[in-house]
Amino acid sequence: MAARKPPPQRLVLALDCDCFYAQCETRRDPSLAGKPVGVRQKHLVITSNYAARAFGIRKGDSLAEVRRKCPQIVIKDGEDISHYTEVSNAWRAFVANFVGSRCPVEKSGLDELFVDVSAAVDAHGAGGAGEIGHVHGDDVLDDARLASAARLCDRLRQATKRELNLETSAGVSTSKLLAKTVAGLHKPFQQTVLADTPSNRRLVLPDDLPLRKVYGIGHSTAQQLASAGVATVGDLRDFSGPSSISDIERLRALARGDDASQVKQTGAPKSIGAEESFWTRPLQVPSERADEALKLLARKLVRKLAVDQKAHGARPLENVQLSARRAAERSGSPRALTSTLAEGPASAQREKTPGREAKSRPARARVGTLTDDAACEALASKLEADAAALLTALYPHGATLSILNLGVTLKTIDAAGHADISSFLTKRKAPAPRPPPPVPAPVAPPASPGTASTTGIDGAEVDPQTLSELPPEIRADIERQLALWRKTRRPPAKKPRRSSARPAPPPPAVDEAAVAQIVAMGFSRKAAVAALERVNGDVQRAIDGLLASS
Ligand code: DCP
Ligand code: MG
Ligand code: MG
Image (cartoon, rainbow, N blue to C red; front, side, top):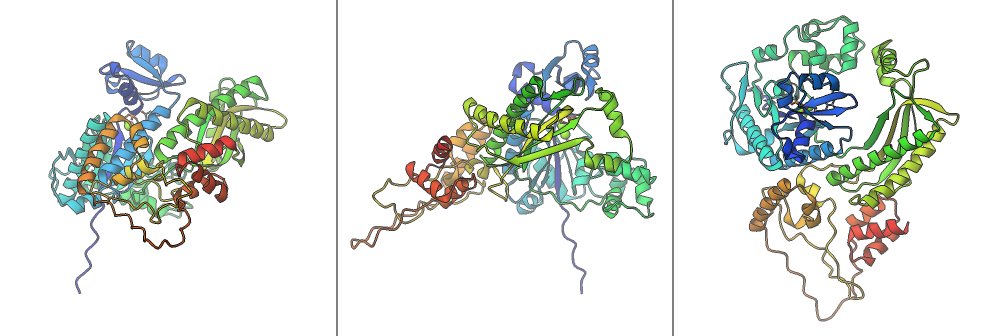
């Protein structure tokens, strides 16, 4: 019998935005184009654009150092990352929409995505427009599927630039490990493809490569391995001694260039938090300064929740959590704290996050749509009160803190996550209004008059309100797809005709999805049904009404 053919290799893109925070700043203030721009957090410049990097500025340089290297640099404050998160979410939705729902998109950082494009390449065959980009290692790219994936990646990156005004770089290969390893080799706005051959694996994973530079080996794992005398890729490949590290086989495989991990579709985050540190001037509790810190944290958290809502819809809160770290006993200086953390076996130190103490309680606040300042302020006040109660419960006799973190966990209504932009668009869709009582509503539920087009957008499902709130570049793209959908859709199903001998009128149809959404927010089914009936099935108005009266 002939040996079974091995399954085709996966085709993976590792995408990374160029100088992400700095690029976001230039997007929202085009007068910065062409100028050196740096983004600061505290006294460090955490990133800068490529014009600034030409002056020798590197990520993490101090503000003073940066000004010395490039006196004319424009420095933007990057403490509030909500705008960057918003751009990141819009980018992820755009990429998911571009590749289609059969290609998983995994968020691996705010400016990083993995995309498995195998299904798209195999559906459309090899070829297609687009550039392959830089070929790393072996001179000739002798793999038609991989070349196709590279062209698809180029088209995706060009469309991202055109539609979102966002420049990205990428690595293209047959696993997350290999794609990620070459993603940063040519930047900005370029891509690199790596064929999976033995010599290429050796090239990107040379024997002397320190393990912390290998994708998939975290800092603490690298430290654990180092304490067993395994510091480089070569050491790990040859390592045969006993090890207490549970996934040593996976790590050894990584050193050989084998990465079996799949690209996993990223859903909505389960928790969201906001943090402040007080290294130089630890925070006494209770104090007015602590009250002020809680006030700011609650508002920071609500800004993040509002950004999350745009991407994933309004989700009910589950718990509110406050965690804190006490300041060092003798000195509150960052140096003293850092060295305290660095001591002792790394694993135990890191996993337990020494000094972190936390308390949580079920969330009392209900979340409506956070589209205006008043709604945000109302939620922030409730969270601030929760935070104050938690802080008192955590430190009934006072304390001095170096870190304070306020977070919430959220219920996930759609456990499957949001695979593409069509679900993003329909998230806040109100059901079609039903005729008002006492005339009974037609029996048939509002059947979708259309069929999903090849673009993945079902126009019948698109909420015009949500569409109007999207960034113009994305909106234009969706509108183009809607035009296509209108051309290809089936005519709407005819309404059943009423018979002359009228049967008993059916009970009014209840939109179960709308009811479930409201029940998930903590209201009873009866209240949900009544509220929906009062506003002719408009789910958003029903929620607003319930929130106003609760
Ligand atoms: N960032 C941060 N702290 C750091 C490094 C980065 O907060 N120590 C933020 C700012 C970056 C963003 O994360 O813009 C993405 O990090 P990258 O390492 O991808 O760096 P950039 O996107 O800024 O630049 P590059 O073009 O090298 O990817
Ligand atoms: Mg980047
Ligand atoms: Mg990055």
